[in-house]
Image 1: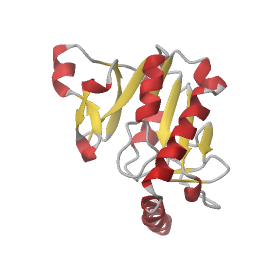
Image 2: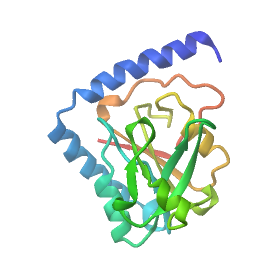
Image 3: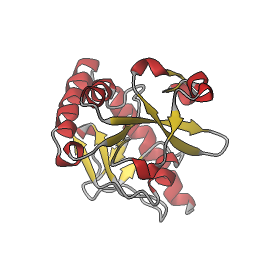
Image 4: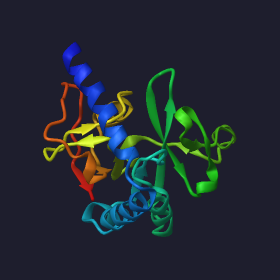
Length: 191
């Protein structure tokens, strides 16, 4: 990896996180609900039987309403479970928000006891028609800046479903610095 590119990405992450953190909570909630409507009204969503979405934390676009809508629409819902040692993400099928607990990075994840008991199961990315991805920064060419862990890039490598990012318009930049392992998304919705 080019050190200057890594530094640019690191600086851009800091800048965008500050910008996103300054969005008033009521505005972030309203924008998140608008993005939920946009996604659930999209052709990609309507034709999908299985959807994976991240579980929001901090100042990210909030996904609780989206998760509830996916469940209401009786679609198969997958959420990520991160293995911080292997640096990989596994999709886990859930049927209720109650099946989540605080996990790695302070993010809600599937309850480990439910995985051990077999109530919850790890799926395969080939089981997922639509993957909804968190976006810290983005450009109009589909470039996405994440948090730097590479979890989503590794997950999206070889993924054959449709990938969608959701973001706040304040996080739109002219150009996201990209490396060869960075995967562009099929679509990025923002407001």
